Length: 244
Image 1 (cartoon, helix red, strand yellow):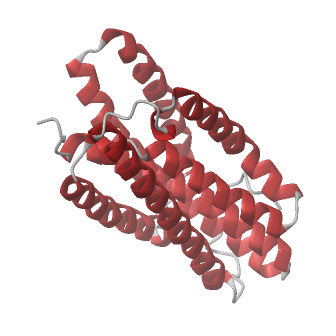
Image 2 (tube, rainbow, N blue to C red):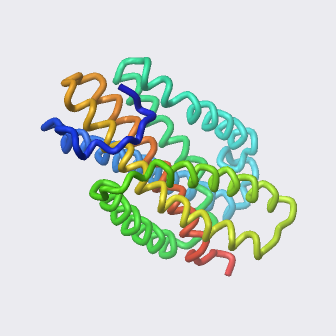
């Protein structure tokens, strides 16, 4: 049994718990999003208050805190899936929820930069696109494995282009990156959904409850990242800046 195979299993008998596993995956996604956006909202509003009061000593404006959070976020992001695979489901759950809280902290600057209306609009648009592509990924009979490989290569290119544009500050490249990001994470949502479905189907047939919990967390981790990254790219395209 492997979590790294996306071989289509439509021809195999699917266990009765497949839908239960998928529901658990989306439950964890929803909980992670609630935590991430909740933390982002609270921290963002505290930062806004500190900026308005010109309180440069506020902990929310402390660069050391942000650098430390970024390091912690990167460490947890790379360690999360291996920990879930090896540790108990309780530890894996705590790691996942901690990761979503860290992501929310890192994302809190959107409440400083963008209006609440633009954030809400981008969230609704993201939710609609995410739901549509999840349905496509779950129902399609086409094997999306090759598409996943292409998307991962495109994602690496996107990361490189983003780093390069930090130094170039090119408006044209900025918009290309944003639209490319939407396309990439829209495709990854469908790919990851099929990947989760296929692996969940195999695990459902084993009746291994611990593996079911691990698959739910790993699947939620993948889809959580798809959602929030898609949201951030859509927000950059649609969002109304507070500075306008």
